[in-house]
Image (tube, rainbow, N blue to C red):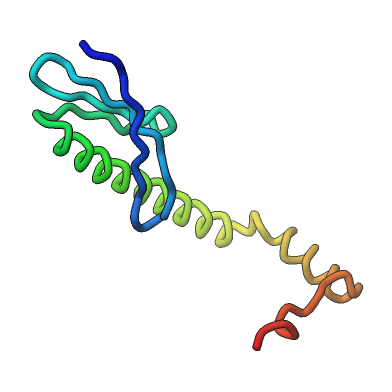
Length: 105
């Protein structure tokens, strides 16, 4: 195996950059993203590997985002965030908030 190279890859939708670790392994290339342990793969060429890493990264980011949205909706329906709504309304009534609409053109 050759030395590990670090290559920055960006998810075009979420516009975040990640450090992909890639390494030639005999006749193939393997790669992973330490920040997102679910993303790892092996391909025949470096170009294929980088493309697969980008695709897998995006799939995982979408899955995490969808899970977060689902959990948020469940928490709202279950009333778990009602205390935050109440607190925000109290702050608004007490004049602790700034009306951001004043600043929009």
